[in-house]
Length: 121
Image (cartoon, rainbow, N blue to C red):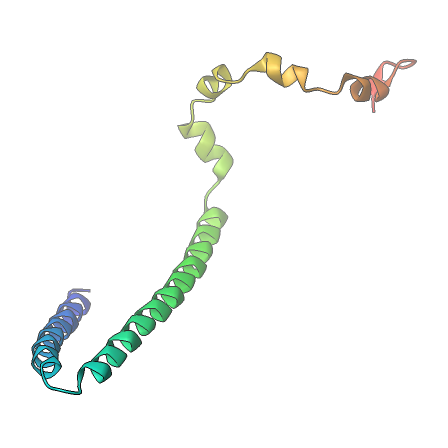
């Protein structure tokens, strides 16, 4: 891993040095007659490339996150995790049971009861 980190540092250093050099050259060239338009075109192309790359990276990251979450969910027992880490009593305290009961369709509930046998179907 340290070698990978060194390679990353090297790549960023090279990119920063190149960007500094480009900045200096573009600044000098922009003062020359007739070069503003090509510089503007290259700048616009750079903006489009960054936008396209950002969109692609975003899509790739989202797809990767979906796969990572799916793999994690395959490995984790969510029921056990919740039982061990969530204060369910605290959640239930925040439930408005009167509101919940007021939303129950009592006619539907009664229609499911077999009054002769006392069983719910």
